[in-house]
Image (tube, rainbow, N blue to C red; front, top):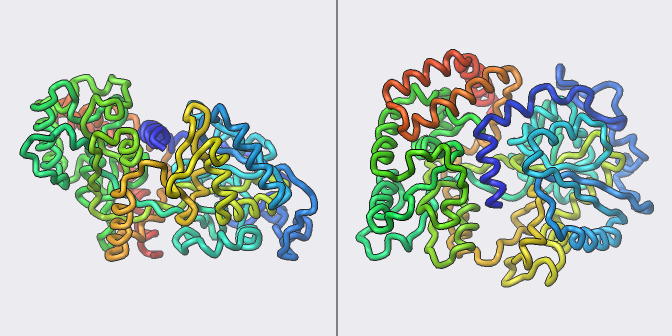
Length: 521
């Protein structure tokens, strides 16, 4: 999970969203599709409905008399020992559903190019990992996936019944279901991951709630451990403005657009840009002070070491609670702690991880039934996500531990996770589940921001401008954020470059979509 989140952070920051939607799906789909006409949002007239497929949907019963071989695509590097996992899983699946499953892997180094082509190649396969960060709505509109309006409730009835209404809403594109979203509640909590052992013996009060607290902590680390960088900063996008804006109560317009924001608690939220936000000068002044104090190196943006915190070279980084858990497990003697800095907590979209059925699938009913089995049957889930008990993983108090991490790993189909079946890895701190529980209580007590958890900015009409602005953001904002350039002249230059790149057009389109979403909710 650590590798996944770090990789996504790096790639999304450089505008992968614009690349993924650049007209790569011409001629999508196979003969059995229920595709959507992207120009009208209506079902194509020449498609075959689920009711017509072998009579199975019409009867509402699944004929499993014939063994079928299903295939699935996931994004991850294939574990060296995956054959052992596959053999065990298929033995179980033959007994329970008279099918087998082949899991195909698209590696991290190649997914940006290969994933979009997967749905335009004409290759016959059944299921695939999808996500909002992989432009699920745009791909659905372009006909990449099968319509699940009948397939989902008919052949995965338990999964469908358990799906929250918000998840079903987020799975809907142009009035139809095109994915099955995960049923694992995650939140937008984001904050400081830091080592308490480095400040032992100091007069630090242990409070980590504000940016002033971060600065005080880093001052102490700088004094007691000059050999360690207080802040983990390397060549990826700096995350300090992201964390700062979330601390102020703002949401980023989209994961890959960290220069446009809105306040989800406003009655009619207005899109605001970095350069026009009233507290940006105050933020840049703080970052200049951190630069002068040496909280990060003068050449951080050329430093390719992405594992500074993990390797003990940095004292504090910002990320999500799952990354905190991973670091706490790796270093139980460091006193790794976590503090959320997001003011307006809400759930992340359930479509952050989801499953789609390809339009080329020859066995969509069996594929959907398999998904129902994976997400409701603990034996199947464990075999799918962890492998073979006492061979590839062990259990300790219901927590799993991969036996040989050079050979095996947790399953990469994250969309299969559910609150009921998912297991924590061995060594998960008690505070992890306690904090997650507190996040849920906070959201339940004030769910004002929750309604925007389903908002997805459709970039299809501003892709050219978005790509240009992403380049300007990286070239001019990153060094400005780290105070490598003068904050006054640098901010003015950044604003000028963004305007020339087409920011006004993006903001106008974003405001239009945000207004429409607000009115409809």
